[in-house]
Amino acid sequence: MHNNDNEWADRRTILNFLVNSLLGIVLLKSVDASNICKITDKISKMLDNVAGVGEKKVVHIVTNDVAKCKATENMLMHKRNKLYWTPCATHCMGLMLEDIPLHKETIASIRIASYIYGKTSLIALLHPFTKGGDLIRPSLTRFATFCLTLGCLNENKGRLTIMFTSEFLSISKD
Image 1 (cartoon, rainbow, N blue to C red):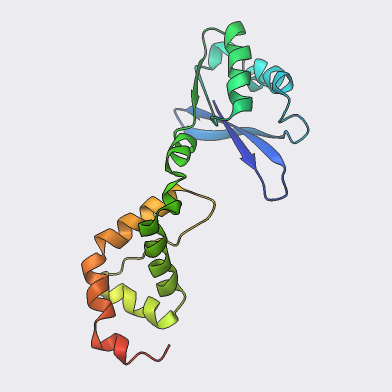
Image 2 (image 1 turned 90 degrees about the vertical axis):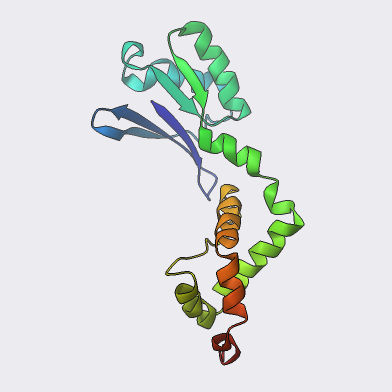
């Protein structure tokens, strides 16, 4: 079972319960936990029945690695010692990568990508020079996007240099 703690733009917290089965991952249910998300024992009680599936059918629980989830894990694992509980790998990687946008090289690279995507003529030029590839647009909400953008910029560094020094760019009117 995967508990995806998802905070929406309107500050609601939605808990998505996903089940991994032979048929793939299936949404079991979603719960608006806005009123209880900060209260560890209430979350623990909600998860205690293991989302109505039953402890014998649940092997593994995955949650965000935030304080409320850690405290809930500690409470539940004392009671349900046959469950495995791990933090979400994506969330953990996001925490590891969150400082990357603060580095000067990253800021400069993101400015290059933002500049290219801010000019329609450069976007049109980009595809022939990158053999149809795109640079990933930077996002303030996902730290891993910075790594992906840097990887794309690095992968296309030579092609981008050629693009910016090409005669096509000098005749561009954008």
